[in-house]
Length: 586
Image: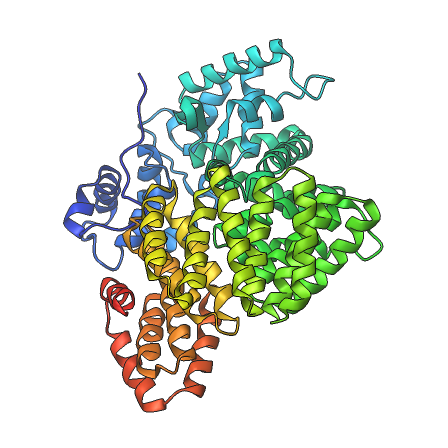
């Protein structure tokens, strides 16, 4: 009989205390704590800690009982802090139950000891994965007893049989994956025990190397799609493997023999980090890996990591660092005669020059990059370069050239079926159309773009992309109107998105529109939107320093009394009210 763990409180938000108390895992934990502390109660002060304890212990009844037994010396907050390593803490001696049930480790060990040797081997090897795994990943990583790099059909059949037996014994869980393919997981308490067995087996180093190699192949396969029409599909795949990618990065950074693997992996993940709004995390990994090399390393892997570091620095607005990284990467690519790497480095340098308000220097770089992408038959790359050439022409005051580039870019994006690209071009064409009195064209483009926004598979990512592009336009002379359009569209998408992490997208949208207002001398509006963004952003957010810098600059340059009046109003706004206020501005 499959016995599922007890239901857990949602990770996204805590319900009220009455509802939380009825969640089965919480109810069992509180009931068992009261056996040793009769006066114990679920309160607003301890609710968050209790809910997290239940999640950390996977809703396993025995684990919850053992944890509750510790409550006579450890209150919930202290108990939670000690659950990083669960098994050593969850011990209890009780003479009225079998030995295998006296501690959680004994319970898992009892199940483990009943396995055949081949099943034990697979069970411990599965510990190399983090956050779940596919059958393909298991077959690629966990079959060590073969001289070939690719498992044979016999190996695959054996792995499938062994995995089925682990599923039967509830040591592995399964869930429906993309396209009907199953995805497997281990409860964290069981995963911790499997890790202990893997370390004791002497196989850990070989498994970690194979694990990193496999997820490098996954990232390399996804990389060309990061700016193409299949971006959504590949982003979703990388999202599912995020924990495994982090594990591979951590191993690559720690192992002295894995430098090249680590450099390649951080390099190909740069666009992924930018598209999901994780530039700070990406830059930390990239710079940390590059610190393990020096200028004498002229390998393709280091060139790719340098390029990735340049892209992430550009996305953060650090044009000086982006320029240095891109130039060094371009030098390596030219020595190696790698046309694709040359094209991407020149593309990045072109964007950096635009960020430095030097569109004249940007245009030849972007044009050469566009030519290389066209020669390589990369329609998505050529479409993007046409878009950025249009931006450079627009910033240089040549609206006719900008419109020609934008229209060709739109044609290429439509040919590729790229929703993101088409949306960007709709906004761009509005900008070059409106000053020429073509209000009907602008209205038509806006009406065409709305259905595309609503049919995007990941509206949150599209919203963040639009906000990121707003950042680019905001720092160009005369780019405030385009930045405002992009910020509003991004904010509109995030407003409608029902997900836990939509806060940063909304804060960035509000802050961007506040900066536009500041650039246009609207002190009260700038203060109001900055005030709302400040209130909505958690104190520990990585975006906090950036927001504080923007607020300080606006305060220094605007009418103090009007700014502070707006700030006070914004600080009092709820999220929905702030977004509505931002979007209603004409």
